[in-house]
Image 1 (cartoon, rainbow, N blue to C red):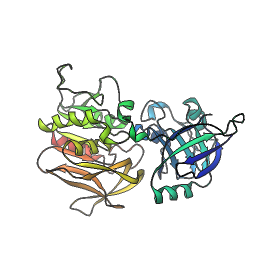
Image 2 (spheres, helix red, strand yellow):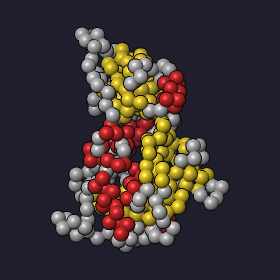
Image 3 (spheres, one colour):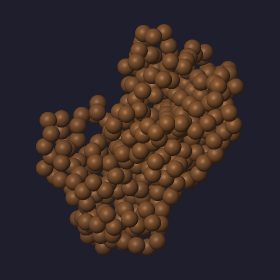
Image 4 (cartoon, rainbow, N blue to C red):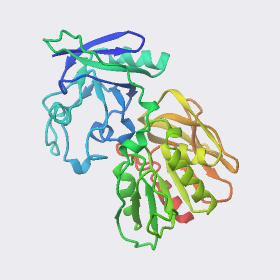
Length: 355
């Protein structure tokens, strides 16, 4: 079937559908990653977004078992590619990408000029859009409104509802992971380092009288979708960790939340960073790390007592902060990198040494 991507400036891009037979609206963004689409599609940070992939060949290695996903299912609202491959070849492939999209009711379009579409977004900034799939009986007269996901509390939508634990305290340490939309590999990287990980909901306050007492040595604030200022309850809880001088590591959205809790500020980027090749310079050195990123907001004001830790070599935006004296730190990129390079996985070791 045919379909269209319609942007809020009324521009239209025609294509062929290979996903679910439905229409959807969201924020249109692009990613320049070459590999790892199963992990990217299941990243909760993409919640509410229609994703354009700039790499021209998608679907050629199918879909692996769910144990390789970063969450329990697809999180994107829609998908746009240049060339969909319906004949996958990979020893881990369990089904075709089109089958996965239809199974989880996510629309997808094959649009030839994704390059022109991406250039448009780079020039004008991310914008709202909707994928309209051609139902013959409706003749493309599907009524669907534009939706701005950043006006919703997406963190509450994707966060876990229960407290869970994994790993063993081989190093005698327990880390509290605040799930704001956490990718699975964050907890796995910690477990691999011999610590116990207790994952809690975004609004879980361990100091509340309503909660059973939990013993933990440090806190990791996960990645997640949307505007960080919507996660007001998480920000309030992080302030308590800061007051009690509990070691804190923020990742992606967690970086922004730590900055807000400490008195900093955040702003929306023009078109965000979504790729596996973002170069970050460590402050005070000439060392450049290649990183995986997926975010539309950034820290625009560094809080008092902190200093810049990393800076993006492309646009000069902040990529990390670290406290001058206390064990508080955060990075805008993904040190667990799934998919992507493992240049910065040492961040976990550095943080655990500081506990």
